[in-house]
Amino acid sequence: MVAHTTSTKNLSVTLRVWRQPAADQPGRFVEYAARDLNPNMSFLEMLDVVNDALEAKGEDPIAFAHDCREGICGTCSLVINGKPHGPHKGIASCQTYMRSFADGDVIVVEPYRAKPFPVIKDLISDRSAFDAIQQAGGFITVRSGSACDANAIPVPKDEADLAMDAAQCIGCGACVAACKNASAMLFVSAKVGHLGLLPQGQAERDSRVLAMVSKMDELGFGNCTNQYECSAACPKLISHDFIARMNRDYISASFRQAFKPKSNASGGGA
Image (cartoon, rainbow, N blue to C red; front, side):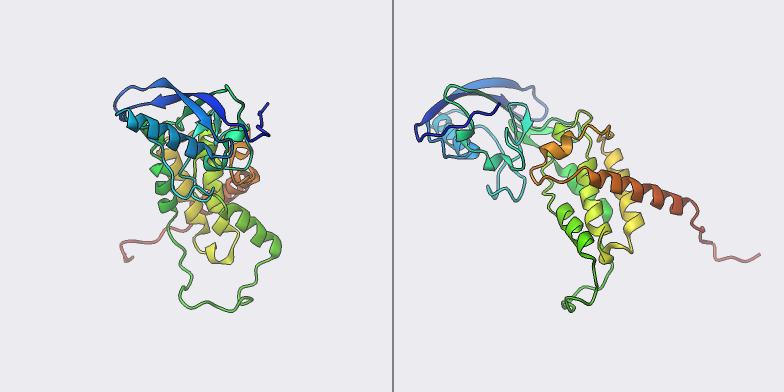
C-alpha cells in the first residue's frame, strides 16, 4: 500500500541507492539519510538535495539521468522500491513526489536492469538499443514539404485515436524493466502501430515490422509471455493490445515476404 503524506510537515527517509562506478566495475547498495525533506518536492529534486550534501562533503554525487522533468522525455527512468518509475500508475519517475512516502520509509533506488540496457554508472542505464530498433524501422516515403489540406487524406477517427495512443510512447524502457523476460514488445508494437495505423505509413508497413522485430531479437530482448507487467508499468498507459496488433502485422508481412516474387538480378537471358 502506498503511503501518502497529507500534511506539510517535512519528512526524513533512508535511501538505499545502487552505486556502480562504471559499466565494467561491480556495484553495491549504499545507504544515505535524506533529512528534513519538503513533501512537495519531486523524487529527482530529493536526489538533487542528497547530491548537494554529498558534494559538500567531497563525495561523488549519485549519477542519474534527467532532462525535461515533466514526464515527457522518459530520461529519468528509475526503479523505485522494485517498481519502474515508482509507486504510482501512469506517471514517470520525475512526477513522483515525496508525499508518496511516509516519514521514516526506506526507499530502494535502482537502475533499469536488462541485458540490452547495460548500466553506465549508478542509476543510469544505456537504452540506446531502443534507438537502434527505431532506426531499423526506417522512414516513410510519402511526400513531405508543405502541409496538405486537413481532409486531403481521410483517416477514420478510431484509427487516428489509436495511432495517437501509440505515439504517446516516450521510449523510457519501463516495459523492459518490468518484464521478467526483458521484452521490448510493448515499445516496438507502439512504434510499429503508430505508423501502421496511418495512411502515410502503409508503403513500408511490411518492411518496417519485419526489420524492427528482427533488430529487437538481435539486440537480446526477451519474448512476451503475456503477463502484461509492461502496460501496468508504462507511464503513458499504452495498452498491451498493440502487441497483438503487431503480431498480426508480423505474421502477415512474413507470409507476403515468403511468397514475394524474386527479381532476376542478372538481367535475364538464356
